[in-house]
Image (tube, rainbow, N blue to C red; front, side, top):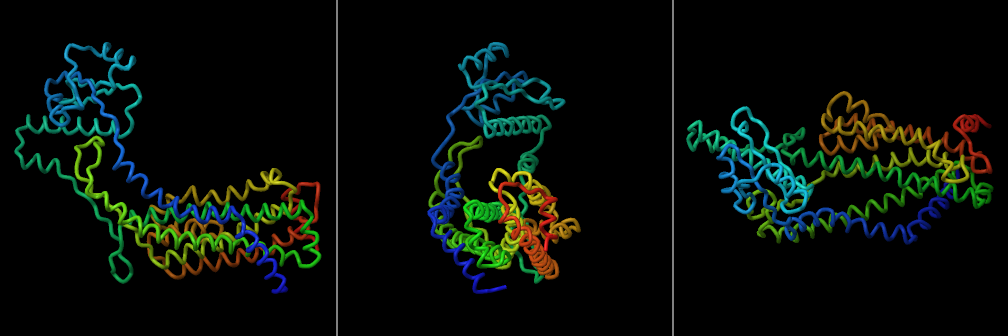
Length: 426
């Protein structure tokens, strides 16, 4: 293998792509999109509020409405003299937002009240009404049971769980729920990146093949060098983009913390519970250096494996529309780790999680999840990377044999059987 020629191909792929407007635009825009995803929901909660709704109440118990009215005087109104049929008609014609029918069994056998509305009551409104009814029924039952204030306080008390992960040294780390979310984010980022940059390789091969540029290039360099240079060049573009995103994202998140904290003392709009002073928890989750290194490493080797496959597919067709049949097995393979991601993340130390995350085709998605949640044994981490390296060497060798024949074939879409013949061709 001629390293100087390989380096020329690498530089051509890398420099050509980082100078494009698409690369510059997406690279600069992504950190601001990340910032918006974190800040906009908080600002929407602070500065927007749902319109006030008042619901009619038919209360056959004679006591629940009074408790609801004490909780929210403007939220509930007694439907004196009205029947369910008349209230249904008023909901349909838009006169009222909705009504609640409370039967007598709610204090006895636990019969559920009925809530009728015009469809405008979303999840938050329905949840708020359910909580209000639960509190009203509970308080009424406790009063009838002559429970003292201590019993009522115990019934109202809720216990939160602070989940902490201990490292091998006994150091206490952050909430495992946060780590779970970070792992999911990393896994889906790599999953999207594998498709994005892999498709770039495939489209690049197809474009060069259809424009006959590859014929000139193939006369100067070996197909293996041409394929390797293309794969490494586009991979370097991905790493460059990821590095910029990580640095810029960390800087923007650092700025976001004091900005969002300014709203910590503002009153939130009523969201189904009593308005209270907002304590907006906003903290940048800390990600260990090993998680970052693992994220980059598994992205890199995962990209090398899948981009080599994409390049072989691109060399076997004349247009992107012809790739669909050949892409089905690849899509199926890369979808498997996404389908089992929840199982692996919920029990990252299980035998199932260990075995599946060691499979080279699944490791790019599954290993970063486990690495973010738990401290992995060295043999699993480095063993997985070693298997991925061996797999890449095998795949790039097979793909180069397909590539050397496929890039010079025109007017015919090759199938898997024909590609196998190309591998055997000498």
